[in-house]
Image (cartoon, rainbow, N blue to C red; front, side):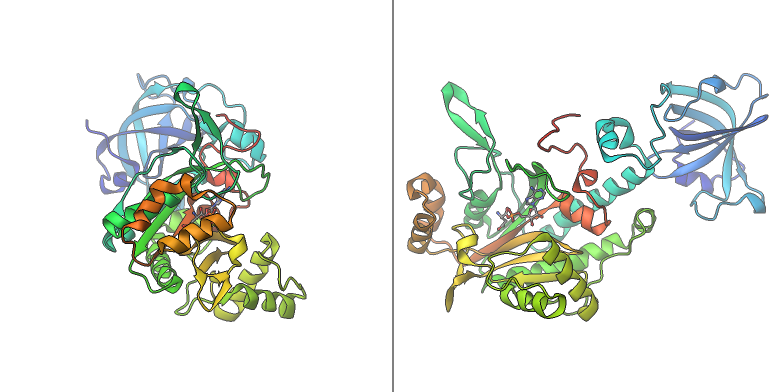
Length: 437
Ligand code: AMO
């Protein structure tokens, strides 16, 4: 008999079905044994009468064992209906069970609130918990929405090298790799230079790929390998074109997230609040708000601290009912060489950070597209333009005004689902102390 998935069982009342999945829980009540069985779509209650003849190795069915059940779909009595479960009106009365993958006894209940280190150390099994599966389904939906949205907007998906010869951003946060013949290579910290080059070929490009940051951070919002959602587009007026298309993406993403009610409920969060007009302010204006409303005077500082981003998010929620806000015009001296300075005030850049539910999730803006200005900017950062020959070629031979952004998938997921530590929103996080599992 062909396999029926858990959610489809509700359409087969009084029929025989074969279902396959993992055992979430087992409850023995005298002669009746209840199993919650989950598969990729949902979960379902299976009832086993222990006295049924030739039913199979019932005693061996342990939590997380993968099993096959053949049985009849019965409607549950009114009083036993579980209204919280899409399959809560039915149960499968087993006539045959088979163990497809026996689970050893678990070291702990994977559904309980575990210490983060325990959770991460045992990722191959804790990732099966209901909460974790809900989380990574949402993460997958975010990545898919990114592909769908930017493809529809005329962007071409690209894949750029992760083994590179030099820094893209000019920093020191690179992991060195031994390459052939003693040559030094590095793991790419961003597809930045390549995505800009590819704008010359396709006008609009995006990439989803891992990036590597050799930063000795031990925070709840940094990891050393993350998935970067990057886009880059040509023929823009200024950074507001980047902001506009990004806001449109977030509206699109929200319509997709609204369909994940089960997953959002697991985390007790609502889709994002995105008003018609998303608050957008310069760094100076943001600092003035911090001073006036929160008594924190950091006017003149080149950046915001994580605590400042939280306060600004509070402000955006209070004044605009918005989970999103943009802070623009960061100082030129703090931004990478490719950031376009504001022509009327070159001390600051045509750049913006998107802050979402208390943390920066995006950094992006307009790039310098004039060859001479770019060479000058590289020099002004103490870098050698010769090391950027191949990149500069793209600008020597006709590059229109262009810009883009980079967004961390795990950071975004953790903010959307209000998860306190980014590592829980990363399948197998890499940090200063963790290279396994
Ligand atoms: P930036 O370095 O600001 O910009 O990174 C952009 C976004 O990537 C995420 N992010 C991280 N997520 C997890 N762990 C980290 N260590 C980490 N570092 C960054 C954040 C951040 O907002 N090339 C530019 C982008 C551009 O201008 O297009 C860049 O990479 O969500």
